[in-house]
Amino acid sequence: MLLTYTYARGYLFSALESAPALLAGALNGLTEAEADFRPDPERFTLREVVAHLADWDPVFSGRLTRMQAEDHPTLPGYDEGVWAVEHHYAASDWREQLGLYAERRRDLTEQVRTFAPEDWARTGDRPEIGVLSIQDLTMLIPLHDLYHLKQAQEWREKYQEWREKYQQ
Image (cartoon, rainbow, N blue to C red; front, top):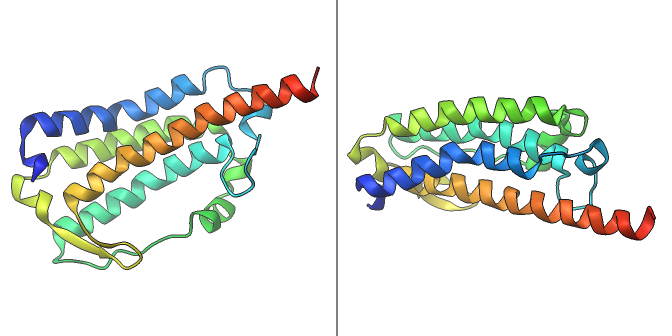
């Protein structure tokens, strides 16, 4: 398993730890109008993205805890759109959520640092995805971060294009 190697874990820990700061940098100077801009009706606004990321680390943590403690647990899926409504993402303070994301990510990273070499191979079942190991899930987390970091960059670019076209 890749994450049994010290250098690979170092890369993972670095990616996990840096994600909130990278997002904060990408959102530097974000206006309320930008935070609520939705160029794609099927995707989150930036305000909602930050709330989603803050909400999702405890989900990842809970899954990892169960995978470490139980033999091949079934891990529930969650409808992100339903969560966004139930957790009031659209009305959240994105700055507060960014702080919460950083705090929860520190906790998640510390949890991941505690895994023993034999833990990386432990598995759980996500019915809509299939079998995942702890290694798979921990490597998925920074990919999830990068997906939303790219979205933040794209949304800000689209907002500027929209503003130049319609606000001038």
